[in-house]
Length: 340
Image (cartoon, rainbow, N blue to C red; front, side, top):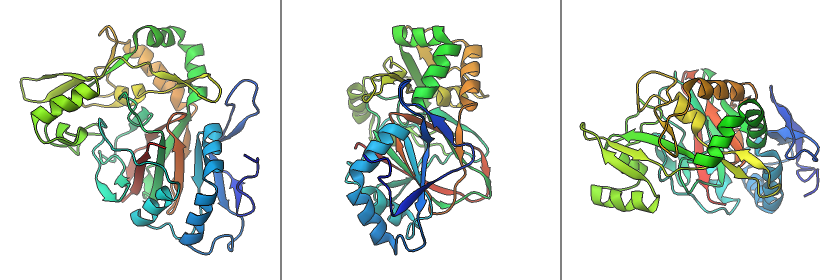
């Protein structure tokens, strides 16, 4: 990949808070996220030219994602709605990822495109790699904005290698326990989706099933154990998951989990933040104060992308975590998940 692979049609730009990050100690810092805008008003005539450019530069974009973790495209013509964003994703010829074992209440809009988390606008959705509470997460995400919120509503991003280094320095015993015990995610689900909770996807939607018999088969496949509560809700326990993963390009560790999201979420017990949705692999409880310190640390190294209509962010889910800020007003930000 040439360092100017996007030229001449695109040029790099900036967003407030954009960070310089290093994929490895020996590599020079790079932009996180990489921001690309048209080099001139005539760079792209319409959507068809954008899609043709994406298709021709797929391998370059892949290489950029392995380096930068996320790429924000801003100002491209013809990207106005879910149908356009579906075409954007499919131009990259990735395999669509079925949203199974996900926690967010969301609705299919068109093709590969879904709403982002439909939980209450006034709550924070905490740090997570998409579906990292499962043994089978997606490799790539695409976020796209049709309508920006009146205020707030930024999607925040973290660079996973940087997050790991910061946490291993500040809370080394937590990282050691992750390696020794793994982390277990606990979810309580009603039968039907509850849109008043950020983590409120019901078990029928979460596992794409209609009966308890089908549910049992799906949970066994995902190595999820479960029980039924006295109220009739489903309580699930993920298998112990490592909470980190090796970057295949550098073999260095990356912070890869949904610990921040589970900590902030209020599904298992009302009141936030909560540690009831997390257990160590031996079923003991993480220290609440330590989870709060880790969450606060991550908040200090985040990049907020304040959406503009037509924005598209392509994310390497293996390298970058995301969160959502509270907002007011109408907001239409979509997501598509890809196996890549």
